[in-house]
Length: 155
Image 1 (cartoon, one colour):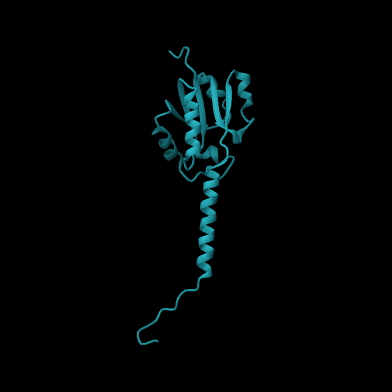
Image 2 (image 1 turned 60 degrees about the vertical axis):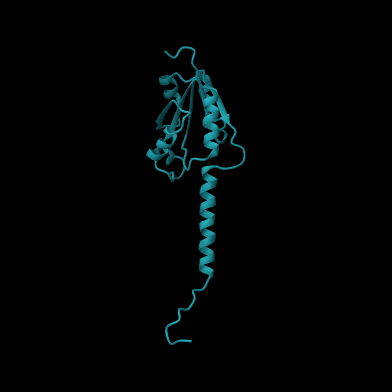
């Protein structure tokens, strides 16, 4: 059924879905006949960084709403050996912030593409911008003295 079809797998947390996520998924689509996108579960993400802001089920639904993936699945592990075997993956696309991490898949006959995000937006940078903006606003509010409320008859 899948003879002569290139099956590509890409995966990520996809927290606070943004332009670079879309670019990577679109790149994966461009080299795939069948595109499978894995969305990391909250438990998986929390094993190596802070909990995502957007809950897993919502992140999964966001990716499912895209036109590009053929299949969207939960990702429970960073070791893709089993998924490669079970789904006959030909190529894997991941952000270049993971450069070198998935080279072991090459030994399994999988082409690995580290997609260059380049400079720009990332979920981490978005979270930092929001946090820094909040801290700045909080600091500014603390610097302002509350105005005295005048009562009737006071002047």
